[in-house]
Length: 255
Image 1 (cartoon, rainbow, N blue to C red):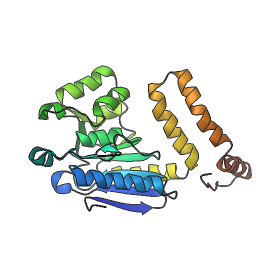
Image 2 (image 1 turned 180 degrees about the horizontal axis):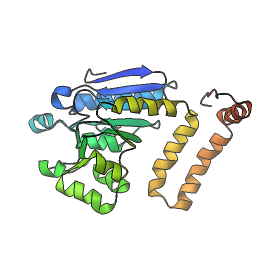
Image 3 (image 1 turned 60 degrees about the vertical axis):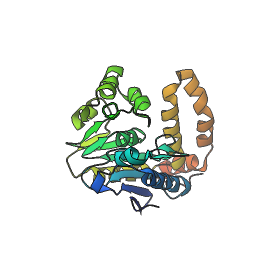
């Protein structure tokens, strides 16, 4: 693990912190590899149920390290999880992004690959690649039009302008907008709520909610049925029913 990404565990929550504040948490290849390693840890450890992704310092992330790209052509793309170490293959478990300060380019693409977004007032999102001779190839040009109306997405993609927290909330890109300095605490509170839920049900809900975007209703129903059958026959489903009847907190096993 590179020291440009630091991880820590709080109960069932994995904190993943980008640690390059001197370059606004710009992501070079070693940092992308470290993000991938952290995501792999989330996936492989059954005790971990959700991650909170945030940045140290004044900004979440300025995206791809343009200095590294401009001098050596290095791109922050890993073989398995792709751009920024996560955007091509996000984890099956939920990830909450904390957006503060300036979050642009690959930083915004990381946010779009997450499941919940806590955004602080005063923060800004943008995809300025067209102003740098590039295009948003880390999933931004694909995911953004899926999340907001077409012309709103095209406005951001073609002008490179930034979107405020208020506008992000208006278009549904932010799960929560909170005062400056409260993003991480809010995200950890949300993570604790998610971590307390049944892990099989949580992962299945994320999978169905994600894959159904590109399916018709009938296709989505057919695709979800095998997952729902696993859930319905799981030990956790029986435990959930018993705990409800016995008026006690459930004890999940993930089975």
